[in-house]
Length: 176
Image (tube, rainbow, N blue to C red):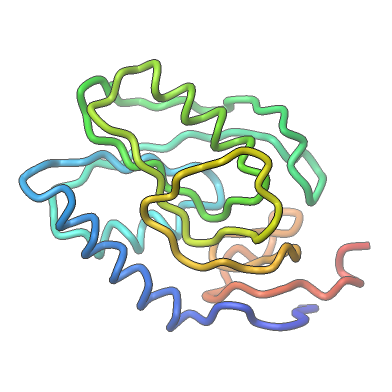
């Protein structure tokens, strides 16, 4: 499988998502926020996070492309699937698996802001250290990780390894 090392265990992810869910539940008491997941990577995060929110949440998804066949974001974002729901006057939580450059999320935040949500916050389970090219305010944050190429828990290498229950660094030989 070519895993060099596990960075974040399944148990650590589960525990942090319980905490994030409790924080969202408290912050949105009496509301019905809509979680917007960024496909494909965020589907696991979104499912597990939603199960830890004790509110009636709605879920929707967007699919974007900024990587192509590369392991680094190009910064050029294409929307492949847009929201099915209207978000005007809704409390929106944009859910992402990982933040590296921040360019894709910056684009999505701008795109969603013009739709006039009541609020728009960002939740991400992983943030790569030292790669952010744009400042992002992540209200619901999971873990800071080194700027290595990682797989598991929704993150893939050529469409594979998303199903791992943990986040791991891929052996450098698998990247060649």
